[in-house]
Length: 239
Image (cartoon, rainbow, N blue to C red):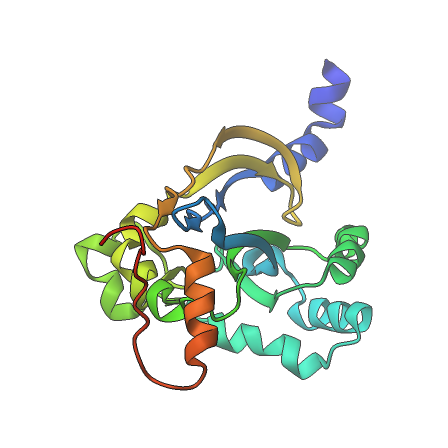
């Protein structure tokens, strides 16, 4: 005990002060959109981002140099995120790279110990499985705006979150969105996760079933082509 407290006490105290807790967000999958027969029209796929906790980075230029060297990206492009996020709190993840390929993701993970402050974030992104089928009905997503963040409906949202901008994605936003989860982790001085202390799983968005029939919709769209018009289907068995 004397050896640990007197001889090694300073070292252990420094290690203890360098380790701290941090809350990491877990993004919820958005609800699926299906036709009346259960055919999935809109799904999700994982979107990977490399973010950086700036307070964990002692030499930002060196970090940018290492990432650029690993991925073969122009250093100027990667370094732009510091200017874009300098007004944000330094303890929040600042996105450096978005839409990382599986190959580059594996490369970054294999060099994690050389990249202090690095955090890999996984966000669900929309996948419209039938291209433009019923796109005028389904709508699309976009980043939440500063004006929307001031509204009561968007009080749980944060800058960078996606929200419905038109069609069903907009009308059923609160139904489809889900609730983000989080995990409390202990990290070292470089921001590397040492252990998970607590975890709250996200709540996925609710699925949306339509009265629309995807097969009939495709036949109608192909029949109309580039022409504007209306397709009316009649049941021959109903007088």
